[in-house]
Length: 158
Image (cartoon, rainbow, N blue to C red; front, side, top):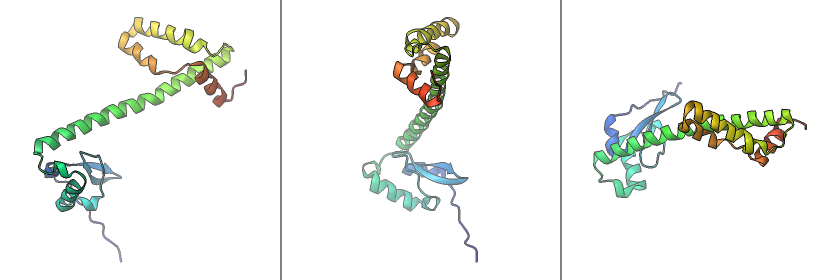
């Protein structure tokens, strides 16, 4: 005997009670635009969504539709900012490792990263690409301690 799983569908009217939809493992799930909580697909019933709103956000029960639409757009812009920042963080760490590797291979003091390499890189990028691009280099950590830790984690002997 097979258990049939019923997938509920999102209704755009759910925004009136503070919910949007998000796809989790190819399954639509309601997400609260106030607290960003993602509920199960079985919770995609107006009565259950209203219960979430009344128990967790009781002060917002009588808010107009515009309020929830505005919260949805704020949530989407927040997601964009977070995803752009998290993607760049990986690149910042990778850049720090690459410079640390060069410092280790040359046998130079670890302080050369923050005293010479980073300022020189900023000058070159400012000249070629402009100030906004050069500002991104400020995120790369090349302090003495960071370079030392990176070199140690790569297992490079001096």
